[in-house]
Image (cartoon, rainbow, N blue to C red):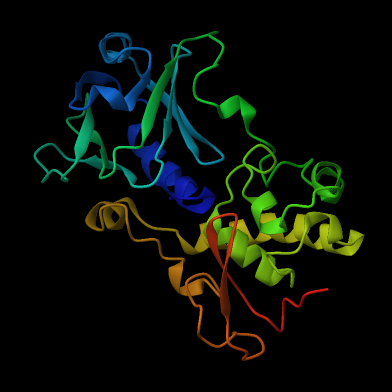
Amino acid sequence: MPELPEVETIKRVIEPQIQGLSIKNIDIRRPEIIDYPSAEEFCDRLKGQTVGGMERRGKFLLIRFQSGDRVILHLRMTGCLLLTPAGHPEEKHTHLVFHLENGCELRFSDTRRFGRFWLIKEDEEDTYSGIGKLGKEPFDPSFNAEYLRSRLEKRKKAIKECLLEQSIIAGIGNIYSDEILFRANIRPARPACSLTDGEWEQLAKLIPECLSFFIGKNEITPEEYLETKGQDYRNTPFLQVYGHEGESCPVCGAILCRTVIGGRSSTYCPDCQREL
């Protein structure tokens, strides 16, 4: 599933290309991907509207329109958003196409069909997408050690699982939780209640630093993004532990271990991330 750095990359690539353009028509091949309202109302409401800009919130993408309406999209496991010239070869499992006034097409494809769209009208309360239940953004000025402690310091759950809770921190998934905890020298299975004040401070510092680092490594031109079908995440070679179980730790040389925490795979260094 795309996590915060990947979703931010998509936003940065797509937004400058569609801002100020109006929608001529919408082609929906799989009505079930429109979670709210109906697919028919989704099309009728958006036809002729002009894009004002895009935002990212956690792992969600938002397309804002000059009318005040907004479309919310969650890519889930395999969703992909591409802006293509008209006539460009279409990806298999393309379920929705926005036909734009300049002849380009904003296409959504999704192999597993878990991705969902919501259209929230101007001044309408969003009680549909779940975006209102998200916790703080890692880049929020108020995201700090005190915030993390206040939400997690009494929890017996593994710190890895806590970092994945979107109601606490928006945007972190399995990949970057491993990377963050490795940088913080905290073993993923440790109960959150076992962390020291210094470790909370370290986490609060490293979470935005780590995510910013990978956003930077993901930088890609619109041409490269289209050529690679939105799947060339350039930060992959910079992952230090995720996906590297059985290999040597890049810091100490110990063999990286894999475990399962809360049903999710987790990789860590047994020496750098010692148990208490």
